[in-house]
Image 1: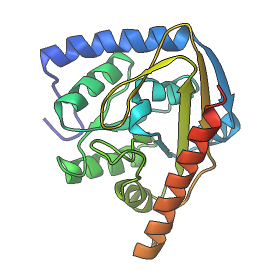
Image 2 (image 1 turned 180 degrees about the vertical axis):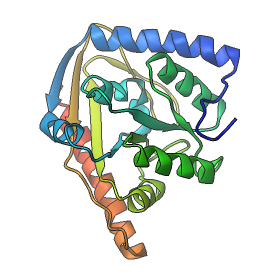
Image 3 (image 1 turned 90 degrees about the horizontal axis):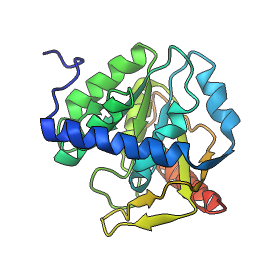
Image 4 (image 1 turned 90 degrees about the vertical axis):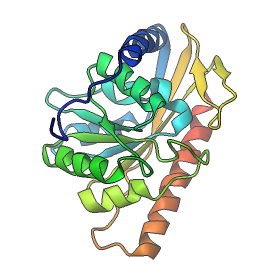
Amino acid sequence: MTEDEPAQLPLKARIAGWALAQVMRLIYFTSRKTFTNLATLHRHLDNDQPFILVSWHNRNILACFGYLAHARRGRRFRPLASASRDGSLAAAAMRSLGVECIRGSSSQGGSKALRQMLRAVKHGHDLGITPDGPRGPKYVVQAGVVTTARLTGIPIIPMAYQAQRRKILRSWDSMIVPYPFNRLHFAYGEPIHVGKHADEAELERCRQAVERELMRLVALVETV
């Protein structure tokens, strides 16, 4: 099997992932949605330049719909999922939604994942990264996302959503689990560009910019 072929997922992960995908669909499609600054996403979807959509780890349950609900024909979304058991569940759920994840993280399969992301971008695919995942700390952007933006030459678009009615899990990231028949608010930030020749100081400035913008969006979507 080559690096770009879909990974074989364990049977338990496939079954649980399919069930999770149905729950995700139920929550999203039975809820009323508000979108703030959606024009930024549409502007990038309408051109030929790929981008990296980033959202905090604790909003993973519905974050993919922030892209899929507006995707244009011919565009493919390739989010990054960790090589862990939880990552297999996420990858299985995304596969049930018609999305093939890139597997790996900074600690497991990082170089392989980066090669796959670079190839995906060359094919015009958009990337998805949870910049504080897979193990945190919560709401701290790791360096990998800005390094990926520098190497690929594509912009980072921050996104956040909030649900009016939700359960907060006792996990490291305080995972948000929205209820069905809800009110959802999605918000998109302006693109953040990382220069091809950015040095460590510039990379850190961009990392902080992504972190600040994501936190601004979190505050904004609280007005759901």
